Amino acid sequence: MLRYVYFGTNNLEKAIAFYEAALTPLGMERCVTNDPDWDRIAAGWGIYEDGGARELGFWVGKPFDQGPASVGNGSMVAFTAGTWKAVDDFYAAALAHGGLCDGAPALRLHYASDFYAAYVRDPDGNKLAAVCRGFTTPQ
Image 1: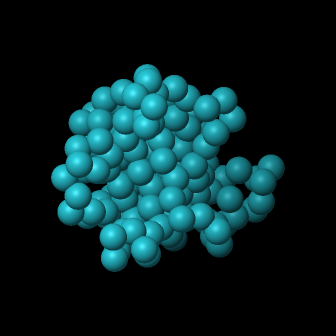
Image 2: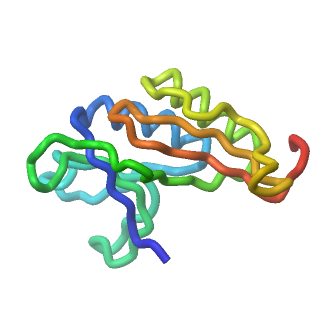
């Protein structure tokens, strides 16, 4: 359904450090574009192949309009986690790298009996979640 998601940042180096730490526990690796102009303004995680012809990625970078990045009210990206531990590690890494808690790791029974998630804000204030489904107890 999605090809990519792009969040703006006001500090690309800080955002890269944050996302590298937070997304590694979820098994997400940095995209390599081999385009020095693009790599100067953005960084991505996920799949980027054949010059972007095959892409499923999460990107963070400078806003295209050159204005300051701002947070979308009600916007959130939820990443898939394979285990509760991956959710816990995502959360810990995010907080250790400048993120803020927006909901500690826990079962969210009001969504479903197997909805284990953590919510954080990145250093720019964007809301993120890591969600594991399919288990009702820790693996």
